[in-house]
Image (tube, rainbow, N blue to C red; front, side):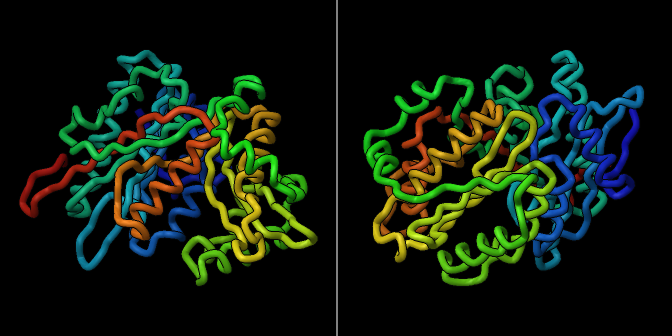
Length: 341
C-alpha cells in the first residue's frame, strides 16, 4: 500500500484521485482542504494523504494538526475532522481493514506531534442512502473513541417534486407562496467576483460584524468556479436581500451558508422561498441528496445560543426529508499515555 501526502501532489492530481474513490464528497476535495487550512487559526500541519493499492486510490485521510496554547490535537478549528473515506467498491472486509489502518495512521501521526486528542466525524453524504455497511454505524467505537454523535437533516431529491412538496410543513408552504423575491442562481458558468462580494456584504450586515466566514468569502468563489458550489441570490424590489450558498460534489449537496437583510425584508419570507427554490434547482441539476444541516433538540432558556440552534433546526426540518445520524468520536490521551508508534 502506497501513501501520497496532499503536499506532494498538485491540486488537480489530488482531485483526480478523490473522484475515483466511491463515496467521496466535497469534504475531501482540494478546494475544501485549502479553505480549511486558511480558515483555522490553530492549524500547524496538514498531514492529509491518499492511500493507493495497485496504483489505484482506495482511501483518503484528512488529517490536520492544530495547536492551542501548547496543546496539540487532531482537529479542525478545534472541532471535528472528516473520518477517512474508504472506496465503497471494495468488499466490506477490505473496507474494514483499510479503515483500521487509516485510523492507526492518524494515531501514529498524533503521537508524533504529542497530540492530546483526536476529533473525527463522519460525513453523512458519504452514505446518504444508508447502503454502506461500514458507514452505517460508528466504527470509531471499535477503536476506543468516545461517542460524540449528533444528528443532521437530509432530503432525498430523487423523489418526485409533488412528494417533496407534500413533506413541507404547512407554515413553510404558506411562506413560500408569500415569497415575492426574484431568485437568480450562479454556478461555474456565470459566477463573478462581484456576486461573491455581494454575499460578503449581506453576510456582514446580517452578522453585524466581520466574521471568519466573511473573511474567507473568496474561497466560496473558488468552490463555485470549480463546479463545486451554487449561489442563490434573492432580489426584492431591486435590492439584493438574501443569499444562500450550497456546495456540490458528484450527486450530493450541502447547505453551507445563508444570510439576509432582515430589516429590509420587513417580515417577507425570503429564506423560505430561497431554500425551496434551491431544492428544486438542485433536483433539476441531478443532485440526489441534499444535507440541509445539523439538528439540535431540547429546551433551553429563551435567547440562549442553544435555543437559537433549536429554532434553526426546526426551520430546516420544515422542508421535509429525514433526520439521520452524524457519527462522531473523540479519543483523549493522557500526557504519558502510549500511542501507536
